[in-house]
Image 1 (cartoon, protein in one colour):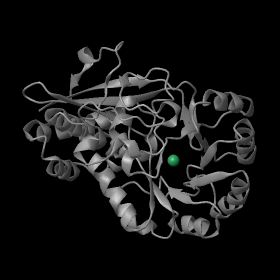
Image 2: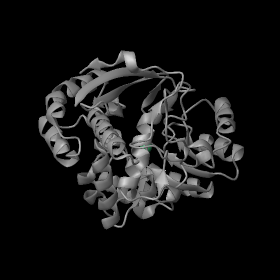
Image 3: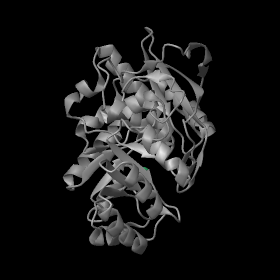
Length: 351
Ligand code: MG
């Protein structure tokens, strides 16, 4: 296989601000793997500074993976993944892009969508939430109005006016299902106090109330909270799931954290074995990245696949979450392709 890549610029419709800050544009890396007979697989890396990644770390990792991928049989998905993990620790977004491209290629070679190869039924996907990022009070109502087609809103919190934000969203969307994500910004005691208020507001779950390494804090919150507690920043890969037993009600899986579609499946099964619920989410990414993680959506209780829906310039078409309904493409592989107006072919570079 030949490995090449290109960097793309993604523009969210509004700056995407969470408790740690935010950006008005994002740069992701598209990975292409081309087999000798011309079949191509695509994947997207959404590097996140919080996890120590950037466009340059992704490109450097791809350079290290190239010799392995050039010699590999794409169907040897498990052994390729093990090999990449021996070469480099971490670098989950780069590995996730390679894993996506390999699965895309294998699915295209077999003429089947990846979710079908896994025996999954696309009609059993949960609805996706749509994120209301942190914004000034006067902007929040407008954001909620723009999200009118989405039945579930996920509100980003972790500010000194969290209650005000929730009240504004709730009064603008009195009937919608609401979730909140504090992105590790609260103390455990504050989270418990917030859970009483959030329960009164009809919020259905709290994501990552406390710091990523504060597992005892999660346990403290879960014991006292009226709402289910989910781990995101505390749960990167399958090896993190067991230590969260009893500390959370569920986990949030992302390709940019776990580094492969196979690891995402392992996380689902690890969580189920420990009686936990399962959610999957995304970073700011195009419909290519969303189409990759969405392959596991029939296995989920909750989905948060709005990364591409938040963009004003999505360069791919594939899985859609219009109106909150996850529609997996029936096309082979990940079912994603460049948008009609986009010509990506000229810009790929050898890694
Ligand atoms: Mg989160």
